[in-house]
Length: 187
Image (cartoon, rainbow, N blue to C red; front, top):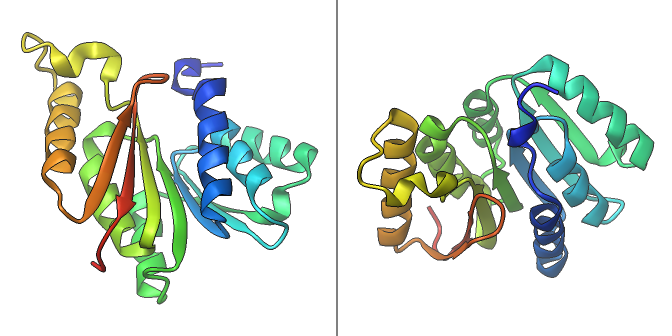
């Protein structure tokens, strides 16, 4: 399928599921669903009463994801939001859902990472996790000769996370790199 490189690796999916389990997560958010592999892994790790808000702008991708949610028996746990993720996250905040999510995963438009992150910091509870994918960007973030807009955006975002005292972080070099952020303070 077009864009198949956007799919997380099996190792990443397993890590996401394990993090949700360790947290005892009940309420999760995914920004950027693609065909649903990572959200499926998290939904399978949630208890029967759990909920995952799945944000995706591409309707064709969502139809594929929904098919797999059904086949895996977790469709009742996944609240699909077919819209721009920024709009969905702002709507959740406006509807009083700040500090009520345990876990979030971001794998969407790289130039919008900082905005997703700031909104998710409002939605995730203290002690909860925000996991961001593609933080190594195929090694380009470490190459000073690479200066395209996406690379610069991820490089700047990584620097912001390193300096952000609202979270503890760990950059994990699996897949294309994932940063795990644990929220420390109310925002």
